Length: 378
Ligand code: GLU
Image (tube, rainbow, N blue to C red):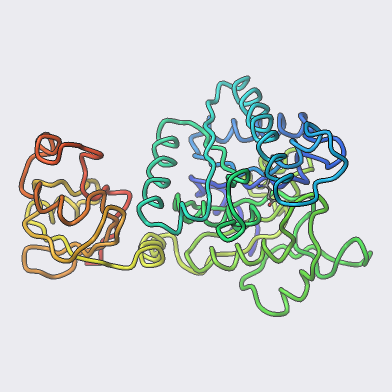
């Protein structure tokens, strides 16, 4: 990809997930490196002030907590979980302090794999992150290491950041590591190894180049980064792998400079929303709309309200994927629903202000929020 294309990508990336590896902001021996966090916060603050939305996925809890525990090594799951618990608060505090100094508010979000595998929780996590972003707040995400059990662990934050990018429908995932990018061979062993500027497709030969090489501090190696990039590429989200230990990396990358390795996306941004919905949601039922609601949705600016719903088919819960049908019964799009089928049946045709009186609760005004729906062409 030429620099022009890098420039275009950098310009158009409005919502960005920045993954910060342990090796960027900590050492096992000395814990967190505050100047690095300060530098990252400064660069991200500039992006936010320029109107971009940023979600940070940061590792470093275990490394930050190690020194607190005062034990010689971190062998075994309980001791690592204890280190994560002790370190997470220190990690978030450092971010909070440096972002606050730039006038940016942050929020901590700790996720487990259950939160994205379970669709009700998927939608909740998505709505929470979306709300934080709409308020100009930078969510700082990590895995909930201190409670999560092995079977439901993401295991590494490369995988987690890829899922977060899908969760928030990001335009770009930027992975900050302590290596310059993907090399033709392990640069620590081969002096002539070259950094590859662009990867169009994660083929077997690309995987072979990655070997087991990666960071010294973190959990993931190059392989977990390639896996995350390959998965995102299919859902239309490019991944940029850059060296976060170098000053100004984020700023340079988003000025269109050819730093690191760019894994291009296969789906176009316009097709992405639909891919996203197909990817995350199997359809469990249908909601039928009256002509006014169908028209409102087609305008692209409106959400689906209870008042425009005429009929519901299928049994589904909040968070399910649903087909949206026009008055003639044909599919006009798909969405993730904020209410289950039984509740929609009770509120259909009613004004949103009546929802609480009818159901005894009101989680949302919208039955399907416009951010969570994709319309068919035409
Ligand atoms: N969640 C871990 C931490 O904060 C890091 C996992 C990883 O290195 O990818 O320490």
